[in-house]
Amino acid sequence: MLTPCAPPAPSTDVRRLRFGGPVAAFAALGLFWGGWAVLVPTVQLAVGASKGALGLALLGVAAGSVPAMLAFGRMIDRGLSRPLPLSLAALAGCGVLPGLAGSVWSLGLSLVAVGACSGLVDVAMNTEVAALEAETGRRRMQFAHGVYSLGVIAGAVLCGLLRQAGAGRVEILAVIGGVILAAALVNARREARHTVTTGATRFRLRPALVVLGIAAAASFMVESGIENWSALFLQRELGAGAAASAAGPAAYATAMAAGRLLGQQVTGRISDAALLGGGAMLSAAGLVAAGVSQSVPVAVVAFFVGGAGVSVVAPILFGAAGRAGPEAERAGAVATLTTVGYAGFLFGPPLVGGIAQAVGLRASFAVLAGVALLLGAATPRLALGQARAAAGSR
Image (cartoon, rainbow, N blue to C red; front, side, top):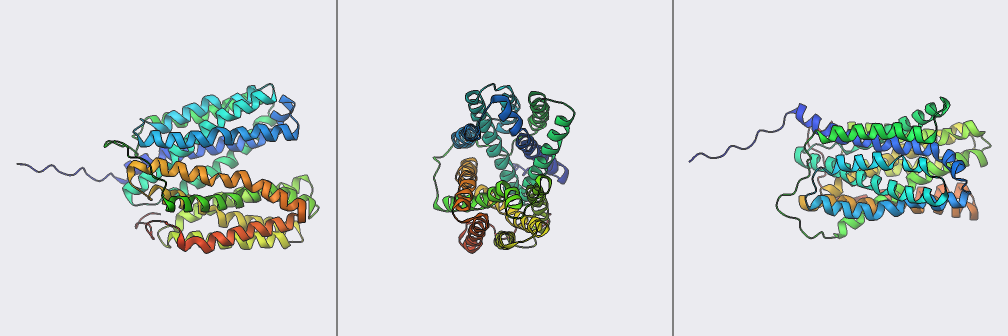
């Protein structure tokens, strides 16, 4: 009797093709949120929302994303076919809804839908990359998240150019939706890597996964603190003008992309634990430098250092979550990490604002530096899986 031969290992070209689809999804999602950040003031004026009402409407993103992510992760683990192109197509359709809103209530409801679709894409694309990492033994999460950061920058620039050309909010979101739909078509032509053929198991919330989620929440708290408060710090504490104060968020966004792309280059040379711990400590140093800075250039460089350090943390944690259990629970693990971690995005800005109100913005950045230090100190206790990426991961 002939023994069946094992299927040949996928070639490098095939692996790149499989990776290209999720990378397109990361870029498309970043493009949407980068463009949306620029459109928020325009949308606020269009619906006649006060600052408080706009804040409540923006909570719709979290209200939609949290339950959607948890449910979608379970659906993927149960064998949902082609979750990434489906979720991208849904985001392409729902992404234009905030541009059509005519009231605060309709804006809030549209953002619930956008948050849900964005959460679906988030879980699906991270699960795809985690599955490819498990299959090939090569780490790719840093690069994928770096592409997302580049997408955010590109989305902001594209939106600014379209607004300068006279395009309205609906037209801009429609253009971005077209790009997202193109990413969906790219992924529809490729085979999904996360497939379950033996039946879904009951998802278990493992303590190690909860710890990873808390670590992600800490890193997202630092990210959101720099992103949301750096411009205000430059303006109020250092007297920067409107144009100069924008250098803070710009430096942060650039650092996030550069840090992750550089992180991909050193992956395989140093361990995940060393990269995560070193990044957290570097971020803490940058935040301390920002808090004590007395000039705009020094503060901008400090925000760049803080962003570069924390940039590598989330990709490492997403990859670790994908390796934390059996394949049949991978999407649920990624969804849980995302849901717990995104609490940092929700609580980070209010925490910084509350501390700033009480004792000043400089103290707020000192607190964020403390969070980064705790994250670095806790690194040895995190279940990061394989200590060193497989050879050839670069």
